[in-house]
Amino acid sequence: MIGDDGHFTDQPIVPGADVIYRPKGNAGEYAPLATNPYRGCGHGCAYCYVPPATHIPRPTFDQGAVPRPGFMQRLERDIRRYQAAGISDGHPADQIFITFSSDPFHRGDLSLTRQSMHALKEGGMAFCTLSKGGRRALPFLPEYRRARDAYACTLTTLDDAFSQKWERNAALPGERIAVLETFHQAGIFTWVSLEPTLDAAASIAIVRETYRFVDLYKIGRANYVPTISKTIDWAAYTRDVTQACRELGARHYVKRDLQAFLPPDYDNPLRVPQYHGATA
Image 1 (cartoon, rainbow, N blue to C red):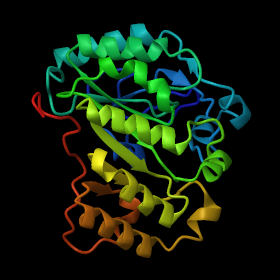
Image 2 (image 1 turned 180 degrees about the vertical axis):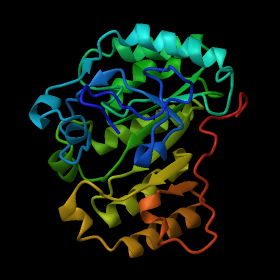
Image 3 (image 1 turned 135 degrees about the vertical axis):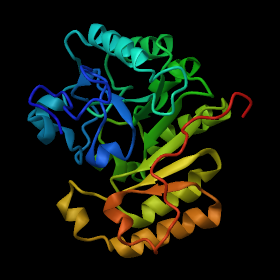
Image 4 (image 1 turned 60 degrees about the vertical axis):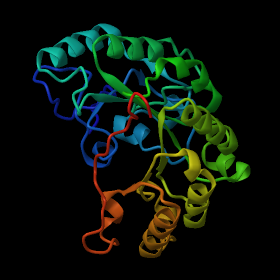
């Protein structure tokens, strides 16, 4: 859950940790650990769950990302705590998700994103970013290590007009996809969040368009968009999207909200390594 100050207050793995924490619920299906350098985001996504969860009025949230007070000092202190606990230097649970409360490549000053990456790397930890920022991620490509880190983006459609309706200030789908391919070509592990699913056919089309340079899909539904949630046949969608993934050899994880529609004993591991080997 998220506290009134915009701080995700889930239980830390390491006692006393402040800004590196273990996310729970839907967020916990994305990452074992996370940190949130910012509050707010200027992408203006109509479906964003963060404003109500953080009790920030949506117009205020949509004005842009604001650095959390004292974040770097708090992050560096937490990294030392995790080092002391042995959760660094390649520990399987050390990849830190940046960020659930904003976009790491939002439309404002991104220096705190770079500082966070540097601090985690210097502390022997890995990171993963999930973004709709498109080309704003490209200057950060040299920061990613093929054997430790991951780059991901959220895709809801291939149609620009549809995206502009729901994600009015985010990079357009084609730009996000091109950046995914660039990271893939550089040897970085890439994944796509198919959540929220706003149109079932569109999500399946995304898989068919991108599977050659995406290492993993995380498939969810539209939990915070009632008008969409009530119109999609989620059982049929789960069947069709997983069939497409299997046909294309696309690795995927179906989130808990859709798992009731999977066949018994469906191979659906929660955690897979989100990095490539040094020579991959």
